[in-house]
Length: 480
Image (tube, rainbow, N blue to C red; front, side, top):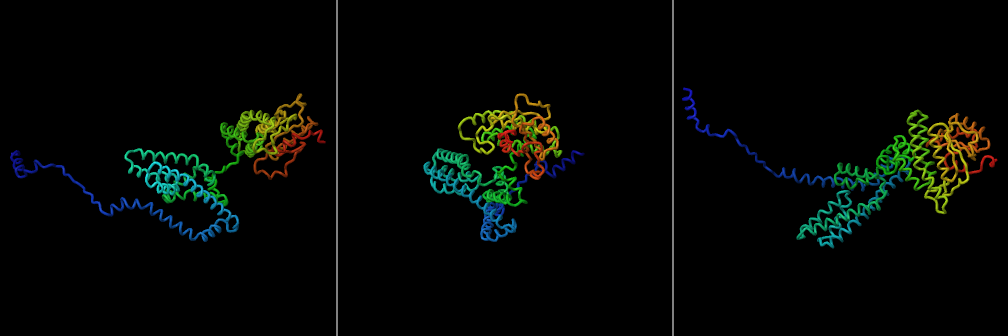
């Protein structure tokens, strides 16, 4: 009975048994004019629109340049018009110098391109040379863009790939020569902006204003750096963007000594002593760095371990520079011109020959390290120097050495009372010896000048120059 019912249902619907249960749906997209405009034309015109907008802004800024200058003068320093005018003049001079240098480089770049394309046989070589001259004003990508049209022309007129290869090789050779030889010579330090900042500023202004921002990125950054040099509230810009060192050499060395980067500070010291005398390096860089450390130590900012570590690093530095003493002794014995940068401290002559001097640190390990540096500087002058430790037991007559002068080095300014006590003991022990106190105050520490007192010493020397004058002068007995 059930089978009969199924047969009747199948007979009533004969198409259901053979029908495909899957339905196919095809979606046909309708591309209209608006879709084509939004997909192709608008993205292509966006850079053109940004360029036009920036161009209009520049035109109106030039038309109102007088009023804008007055507003900048009032905003930056209305009470000091002279300084503000100099600021604007410096910014304009830097930008003008940069653009002039860029124009010269672009001409030097475009002329070989023009002549090379003409010799290769690419049509319209002069036109492509002019396009290259203009496109080179766009940093980083201008050269690549200017090479597209000549390559396409070479591909169109050449029966093989030879013309295309010669054209590409021409652009590569000229680009390599310009980037590595010509641009460093003409640009140099003209902008006053570090190379890293030039790249970062190009990325930022390109993101903000498109291709036009890439063109004006360097001039705008130069203006910000120049303004920051004259406006204290904008000091961030020259510190972060400028190409000048932001730390003094002594502060930089102190930082390297603090972290224990022996390779860095020994390499820097070797480079410096290759151009200047050892005494100049110790006087202007190394001992002031120890004075900064001593100042922080007295203020409780440095622990005993850190101070000891810095002193040990300073000793390593003096050991690395021991060969410089021998070199300067040989240099001073030859009738040659002194090193570049010779000063009153060291004029290329061995003024210390025949002198016997004892040097010692006042109290701390840092004082001892500074005394060791002073001893090396005196040896480089030809003097016979004995470096002593003030805290250790001292022989009454220093054996057979018999110094003409004893110099105590203190990095504290003013020195601690215990230093004067040590000077008095030295005076009683060596009554006929010239006794000196050498101070190296930390940078900017001029407020303690009225409190400086030589105490029991015969002389008080501030810095290497005064030490040399006193040490190489007459002994105490003759001076009287």
